[in-house]
Amino acid sequence: GAHLHPVFSPGGKLVTGSHQPDHPWQRGIWIAWTKTEFGDSHPDFWNMGKTDAKNGDSLPAEVRFVKLDKSWSGPKNAGFISQHEFLDHSHAPGQKVLNETWEVAVSRQTLNGMLANVIDLASTQTCATDMPLKLPKYHYGGLGVRGNPQWNTVDAVTMLTSEGHDRKS
Image (cartoon, rainbow, N blue to C red; front, side, top):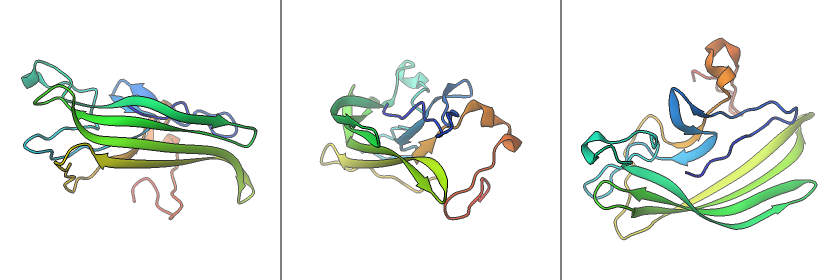
């Protein structure tokens, strides 16, 4: 599926992780939905590394890269526009559920006196058929970030959002 990895800090430290043994389906920075309803199926686009024994260990759902529409790079910024599709394989192989476009722009900026790599990721998702993809309330899904494996020890990293929330809040 579509993901950004590796992502580095301006000082060259690796920020993202990918394919870790405990969650091999988590790759860098990605967007996916966990609990969904599509007609009478419930494709899980988050846990794409897990197979479904009742379907002969086949991959029940996936997010697939379709094409790169545009890319650019220069001394101050870079980016790309790409197309992806969310597929439900539970009833028929390759049933398109969502079409997605990523517009990614990256720049190096000074924020509050500190050098930062700023990633602007815009995902536009539209239904691929007349049938909607329903997203019932769930405790995770949407934007995911798999951190550097060195962060696995809880005390090894401090997290703080722009709203002042720490890891627990």
